[in-house]
Length: 425
Ligand code: AMP
Image 1 (tube, helix red, strand yellow):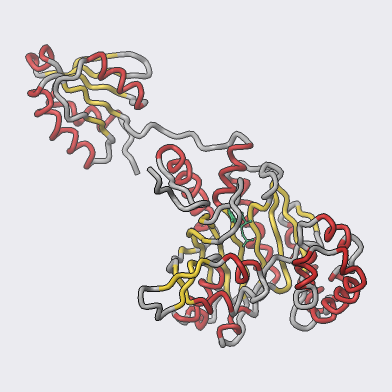
Image 2 (cartoon, protein in one colour):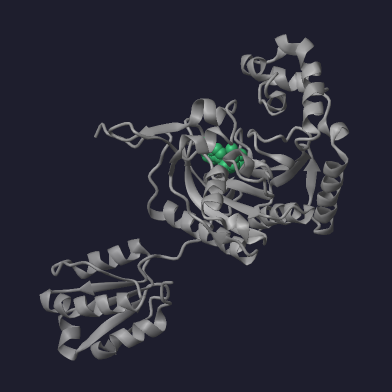
């Protein structure tokens, strides 16, 4: 077939999807234990949601957005490239920021970015993220960072490190930007073309450019720590103090600036050595001013997002993929039409009670091939109903793990299996 899934977007099914679900379930449980409740926003947003917020000069807005139009082209929409701007749009739309109390949310949603696909980088990918609004304290920063650290640890991941930076605020960042521009200007010819074009408007973005020659220039660039205002300095010191109290290990890294315009004060990334070139498992920061870009009064907010694909790659690399139980715990082998007629209602009744039963609607398959199928499906029990069993109104129940078998009354089949097989959630 020549029609294929869109490049950089993947179908998920079978074992892979079951592993995803198991990992997602754990991650949701961690977020909920920390008091975060789920929010889902539409995949499509008005273009302005991102243009006004993420920054005109960012890769996301300049080249990665999937623009979508309806047939009459009356609306200009975009497939959400990230979660935070949509989240704040929803918060303001529903007045959630007027509660006066800190509020905690998490999301688990697909994102869309037109990027060059490679391992760990897709055009449709999935992010789990948290957002904590209306809490300006450094303790809130420490909480979300500790939550992210715990999230990875609870999955068993160990080969990662947290990198944390303070990126200043509207008061102190202009002075730093000027110092950086002054440093970069005489070295302009050594920067990559992209950094050359944006160094005046977004000099801090040069700091996290992956290009080797840019990295060489940046090595000796001034860092923001000397330009921070007193309030930012105190905030940052308190975040680090809290993290140390929580026994979190982290590295202070002046190069972590995050790519987007809306961050202030705390910025962080978690990098994994299990990931190869795309080494970021997740990242985030404080974004107290984002709401003002929607014309609202600014209110404090902080959050992060992790890439679920990358978490799964790291888990696989570290041999930590969750073990899966077989889907079909019970296999019914109906030998003949009469057996099939009897087993159909019993199988449906068991399924309704949460006992996964596999029954082929086929009456003339041999016992040997039934047993082969049961094995292939990883069934825990096989129930055989053939002529002999029918004559005695019994079935043969075989434990496929121990090979033990017993004859039980057909009338007791349901209750016996209910007792033996753990019900699906
Ligand atoms: P960002 O907001 O770009 O920092 O993204 C947060 C996290 O999402 C990253 O640390 C990655 O784990 C993941 N991520 C970002 N872009 C992609 C992509 N194109 N494909 C897969 N995962 C991604």
